[in-house]
Image 1 (cartoon, rainbow, N blue to C red):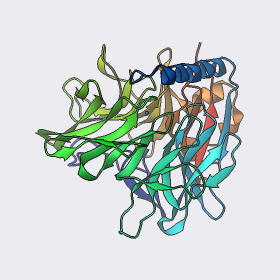
Image 2: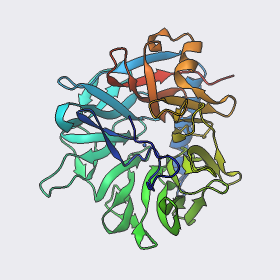
Image 3: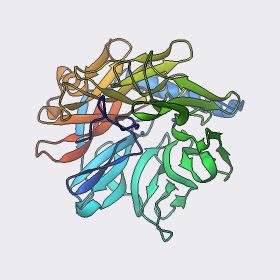
Image 4: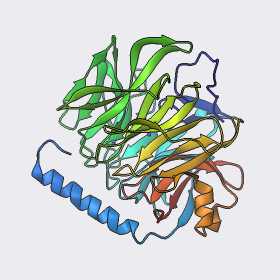
Length: 384
């Protein structure tokens, strides 16, 4: 499905860049993706949310459900799940490149998100959704923020990548080097080497932002990008790359802002999923057997990470994975089958794109038994 970025190519982008659109058949695929400013009230709310999530994690029942496209569409793709696990967002795809943003409930009901192109993420309770609009009268698509039918708000971002748990902070990349937007209309911007930041993830409280930026370095693939982390208090911080590696990009940050995940070229120039903390630096997570992998999202504390990996040298061998601190990287379908979930047996899970705060609800997309692209929602207890 994806064009592989192997050693010796001239492509400087990452393997699964969330901002890239790839054509597959007759429709487009978007390759998918989160304490405090000192306010005690918000800190209390965040801790309350986390307590609820931990309680759910202890009693979750393994399950798998395909999420249908909207009526009249032929495929569906999920890119975000609410931190509480109850809502999923993404888009339905039709013929001739037609796409429609949508939201699913945990039981599979689907609704359109106004006339928007696709949805990338939602707030804690799923009531605030962000993504990209259809092409507007100015001939461009823009990031949007949605809070209910007919409420689409166009943002000064080319794409809205992620949103804080309360829905008040949105990140992406936009006009005048804007990378973070606040609900009061104020923005944050920065220029590095003459270019803006490409923000992809934001923490639960909206105070930690991650993504990538263009460095002044050039390697055999072209300009080198590095992952970054930004906070209002600490400012900009480059996260570098893997030992003796090349470009890197951060796709997401854990809800508590402590763990950054993404992908980076290793010493052999293959893209590999990584996990970064301030104490460990950037660490490679491995693969499912093939040469490449990418991490898309992390749970609140960063102990559960999801993404996709090749299982062999074929570009058609993409599979969704779950990584945990206890079991490391494992094939998501195999983990579900081992937990007794037979509903997934005739599916091919291509990518896990997001995970709930407690690490037990995972969403993504794959090929269903009819070999059609379809979004999915799975629940899986944490390994003991």
